[in-house]
Image 1 (tube, one colour):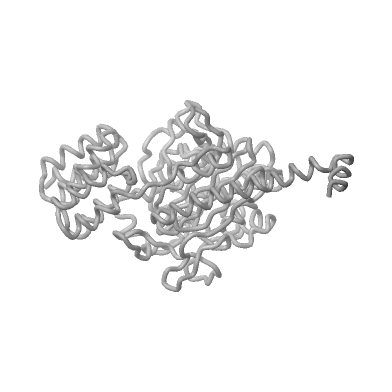
Image 2 (cartoon, rainbow, N blue to C red):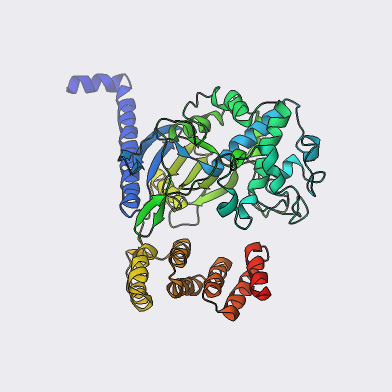
Length: 488
C-alpha cells in the first residue's frame, strides 16, 4: 500500500483523489442536512411534496415527502407532477420574449394592436411591457368579489374570459407602480394565441417543452389522465380535505401548468444557455423593470436576495412562487452560485421561503434554523371544541413554549375556519390575537372587521375596516365591505 501511495504522490494523483473524495463527502453531508431539515418540516405537518436542490449546477438532493395521493397512499417522489401555479408566468414571459425576438410583436406596443376586439380603458394605453411587469393598472380578476365562489368552476375560452375584466377601471396610470396581477398574464397568453394562430399550450410545447425534453411538464387539463399527477389538499384543522375544484381554463397563462422538480431543473439549466432566449432577452427577464425601484420584478421573475446565516450577508437570487388550490410552489435560482432550490408542495400554503433560506444556509456551510410547531394549528381544535376561554388559555400556554411559533397567515386561516363553522365569537378572539401580535399588518384589521360584521357588531366592524383601509388604501375588499355595512 505504501508503494501505491508513493506512486500516486509521484504522479500527482493523490491530491486529486483526496479532493474528489472530500467533495463527495461534503455533498453527502449537505444532502443529509437538507434531509434532516425537510424531514422536520414534514414531521410538523408543514411540508408535503417534492424537492430538488442543485449545488454548483449538480443535483445533490432530490426526494419526496408525504403523499401525492392520500386516498391511495401514493408517495411524493421527484417524478410527481404538481400544479406550479404562478411559476407558469416565467414560461409565458419567455414565449412573449421569443415572439419579440422574431419580430412578431413589440414590447412597448399597446395591447389593442394584437387584440383588436379588446375593449376597455386598458386597450390603447397598456403595453406588453406593462403586462409583463404587473404595472398595467388592470385589476386582477382573482381579487374580484366572489370570483372563487361564482366564477372559478366554469370553463371559458380566453376570448370569453377577458370580457370579465376588460371594462374595469384602471387602478392607476399604467407604468406608475407595481401591483401583482393575474389579469395581465392571462392577456399575455391570449396575445400569444392571436399572434401565432395556435393555442397557448401548443406554442409552449413547441417552443420550450419539446426542445428542452421537459416531458413531465404541461397544461393541466382536469379531464386528461396524467400519470404521476399529485392531488391537491388543504388544511382542515388537524387534517386535510381535497382542495376546491378550479377549472384550469381560468388560471391559463398565469398559472395552469404542472411540472416536476426534475423538469424545472432542466429549465434552470437552459436559462444559463441561449437555447430558449437570447442574452438580451434574458437580461430583460432578470432585470428589475420599474424605474422608481419600488418593485424588484423583471419579466416573470422576482429579483432579490436571501439572508445568509446570522450576519447581514445575503445571496442574490431570481425566484418565483406559485399558489393555486391545494398547491404552493417555489423556484429559487442563485445565478452567481449556480445553485437551485425547487419546492413543490401539495397541501396548500406553507412556508417555502423559510425552507429555501434554511437550504441556502446549508449549501454555504451555515446552520439552518429548524422549524417550530404551529401555535395556530394547536389552538384551532381547542377553540372549535371547547370555546373561547379554553382557546385563550391554550394560546397563552403555547406562546410561552419555545418549541412553538405564532404566524400571522396561519392565525388568519384558522380564524376563517372558525367563521365557516359558525364559531363567530371564537373567530373574533383569534383575529384579535392577530391584531395584537401583528399590529403593522392591514390584513389583520380587515379580518377582525369581518368577524365583527358577522357577529352583528357594526361599529367595531367599521372601525377595523377603516383602520385596514387607512393602512392599505388599495384594500378594495375592505372598501366594498365598508360600503355594504354602511348601507344597511
